[in-house]
Amino acid sequence: MTSISYHQHGHHQPRAGAARVPAYALPQRVSQGRVIRAEWTKLRTQPSALWAGAASAGLTAGFGILYSLLREARPPHGAAAVASFDPTAISLSGIQLAQIAVGVLGAMLITSEYSSGMIRSTFAAVPRRLPVLWGKVAVALGAVFAMSVPAVLVAFFAGQSILAKVGLDISFGQPGVARAVLGSAAYLALAGVLGVGLGALLRNTAAAVTALFGLLFGLQLLAGMIPGSAGVTLEKFMPSTAGQAIASVHPDPGTSLGPWTGLGLFMLYGIVVLALGARRMSRGDA
Amino acid sequence: MIEIHELTKRYGSVTAVAGLTFAVRTGEVTGFLGPNGAGKSTTMRVILGLDQPTSGTVLVNGKPPRAHAAPLRELGGMLDPRAVHPSRSAYHHLQALAQTSGIRRSRVDELIEAVGLSGAARRAAGKFSLGMSQRLGIAAALLGDPHTVVLDEPVNGLDVEGIRWIRGLLAGLAAQGKTVLVSSHLMSEVAQTAHRLIVIGQGRLLADTTVAELSAGHESLEDAYVSLTDDAVEYRAAVSTSQTAQTAEEER
Image (cartoon, rainbow over all chains, first blue to last red; front, side):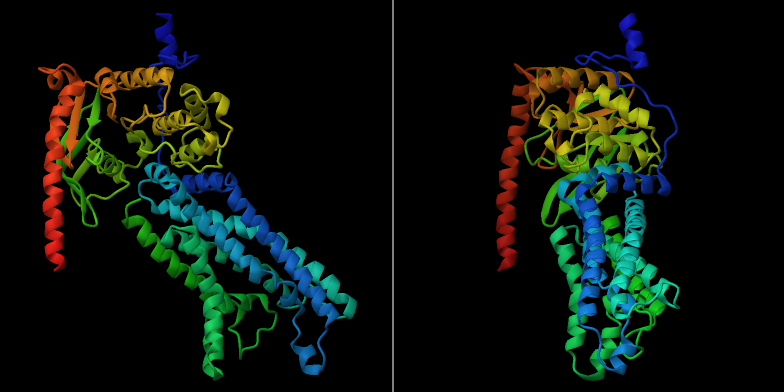
């Protein structure tokens, strides 16, 4: 009798011959908020994603400081060059590299699940699937933004203190500067979401990273090769050129979209890729 | 309760399951047998809602597998015990799955203890032996205390103590009134754990019976199984030859 009551209460079960797994009668139900929490648990316990995040912050700050040092050594010559000199954008130039790191982070949130088989455990728990994709979008957006804000602030203030030695710095309070600095963090967060979309669409890390390079560097390069004004106009609308208009304090209307228009267009590219990924995730076999 | 009606599943030109119909009852352990490539894993993937049927229906506790609001309460499954992120700990693996349904952290601890992984829960799941991975997979399947449990080859890689543990576990789940479907290659194991049997070959149903019925007239369950599936193997050879001929003709 004693052993039976042990089994019923689920305490101190002997390992061999333990016939009963304790019951669980508390209410349970899948919700979007719960799936976001679960995805957050996965992100913070996935070392490869954390490394990609650290790499992104390091590239943002490190490359920004490096480029500021370079411009300090080689300041602009002539009135026109000084007028178009954008010390904010120079100190934020690290986002050009960091965008790849955060894109890889976003993609790996999904591709690592397909390569390990984890995706089947995930979909068994959330059989409607799409809440998983939205959960990953939410944690990529939140984590990358939270991590990028300190990185862009360090890049900006360190960069300005370097450029101050040749009197080319700008203060955070000047019009458009705070927008450019914090907007760069938003750009990186959206690049992370683009990575999530590519991960859902391609399911494979190598393919997603290749597509990421193609979208963020390739298209821009291709458009730049088209001679004349058509090439310049087209380049404005390419994903990374459009999105990085946000990092410029005074974007040149000839070569760049407005900061918010550009970031909006970049977000639209992300939404299109995400929609294609959602379609593949919800319809196919896992 | 699992009800499968006229299930067909094709992957490209390969038909894995062809018009399969059977039901798995509550309150008993049902063994799921068939030669390699018979369609067992495919059927289990469809039951879990991971793969979509090409045609036919699958109902788990009366609903399509992807229609449940509390999926872990209805259906727990283990198909591949290595389906974990290799560098995540067993504890965090289970915690993330539990969180999707708002299952308490204490339940995760409880199951880690119940499957005998207390000492290893904080270690990376990718470094687990196959036996430990099986225990982790079973813990994941049982997180929500599901009404229906589907396990693919759960005794693979387990030691004697582990096999005895699984036997007791499955009997206990059935005694609690759950629906339990377990595939296995080991006939002696099936003979000891299962009451009912579903045998398939070439994606078709060969027998929907009990262990006692199938064994009757044979020396052992294994003998009975071999004579039953021998025909399926011959049938498969005939089919694949004619399919090859057909493809060759189409290509011309």
